[in-house]
Length: 123
Length: 107
Image (tube, rainbow over all chains, first blue to last red; front, side, top):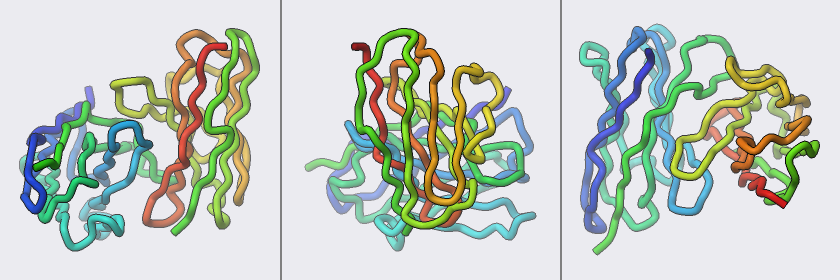
């Protein structure tokens, strides 16, 4: 069974940092692309960024609002995706989900999601 | 960036109704269009991918169509479990973007 389990959320002050983790199981983690998607309270989902698999180049893409502040990494030996978030501001308050798909055929999509972890940025 | 515009933003419907939601991309995205359903407190769930392909396990009352810039999600006969918010999402180019959502509630 495919499982994605996020952790690391919490309350942080503006300007602070937080590191989220997404532990994966039930599939060959290294073969697939993974994304972070966030959802602010009462708003729609917003893509944060993605890490392609090494066999597809291993490139990382970010959304403009987080570029330069957030860093996505992955540890294929630990089946874990990370999101390092620096210089947090109140607009980063959201539930953060990791998501993936196992088809390896276009178009990219997210058929598996974690339960999400809440990040609250507030003084 | 590719902007995704959904309409309507909300609608009220009854069980058994046919419901149509549209999504327009600001530029051509071929068929790189996915639809998600989200219920309160839950992560989005994939309904359709590649504009018209039904995700495994999704009831056949859901269908999708379109290519290029204009797309449609149809629920042929609305069921109680279908009351939710629906989002389109393009995966043609980064940044990957979502539509604003369509909330379907009970009339």
